Length: 328
Ligand SMILES: NC(=O)c1ccc[n+]([C@@H]2O[C@H](COP(=O)([O-])OP(=O)(O)OC[C@H]3O[C@@H](n4cnc5c(N)ncnc54)[C@H](O)[C@@H]3O)[C@@H](O)[C@H]2O)c1
Ligand SMILES: N[C@H](C(=O)O)[C@H](O)COP(=O)(O)O
Picture 1: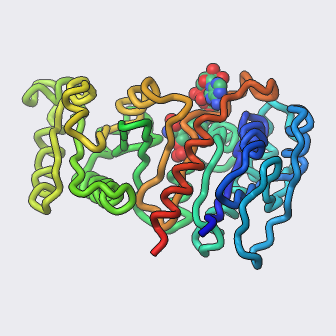
Picture 2: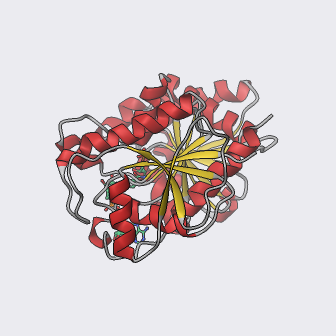
């Protein structure tokens, strides 16, 4: 089976188009259908002095491997020509349309998986569209209440209870219901998608020293521990809640198949310190496979031809592997 993978390069002024064009240089055991403006890709290839053939995507044909030097293309037109490094709110709706079209194709099984390049959350909001990230956007598109963001690099996997939320709102968002949903999704994905027989999940506390017995915060005692007890009673193997600075040490990590952090910057700096440049962001709990890069739009280097494509290649490999495992 040749997986058919939708690829969205993301923000047109960022490094995403360059990384898509660089990805085209190597052959792939997949059909890569780039959902983007063809002119943007052609201009980017010309700037990189890299030959690029765009092959029109035909959904009626069986998937064929995308040959080296080419990409299959599903065109979506930009509102305004993009200049590298210069955000333009006029293209906010374009970015979202590429995501909508790609997610719709995954939901209808036109595509076997979706790989996303980096978007700029700020400029989409500046364009008047409320948007906090792909993760939340795809959950809404798919009509699911809860999904889980997990980043992986080598043997380290870090998932989050809360994602793109101001720090002041984190504590209130950590409810028994959310914890139960997140741990259930994470456990099921580790077992069924990542084929780990009996997954063990390490759970971070929220407060310093996991609350120090209630002297540095009570969320562990009032919310987290009782929720974990219920999940353990269902047979899920959990460690914690442990202080995050204890859990993220080699002896503790060796016991866990994944770490669950309570908020974005509790978990992701550790993961990115270990694997930035080749880590993969995976959304768990969606009815389709979605992987992404570990980095942002890197406006400061866009258009210079120096962006590193390691994380996009890793995201593509992970998507292909998950798509192949999903086959009966
Ligand atoms: N997957 C995504 O869509 C995603 C992920 C992270 C951040 N973002 C968004 O990206 C925007 C910019 O975020 P940021 O500045 O915090 O992070 P960033 O990752 O864009 O940049 C941080 C630093 O890393 C460098 N860098 C990033 N990717 C690189 C690559 N592939 N090769 C070489 N150098 C690279 C940049 O030049 C910069 O110096 C924000 O709007 C943020 O929300 C999107
Ligand atoms: N939180 C992610 C990171 O720091 O890498 C990033 O913002 C992307 O999130 P989405 O996949 O939800 O856009």
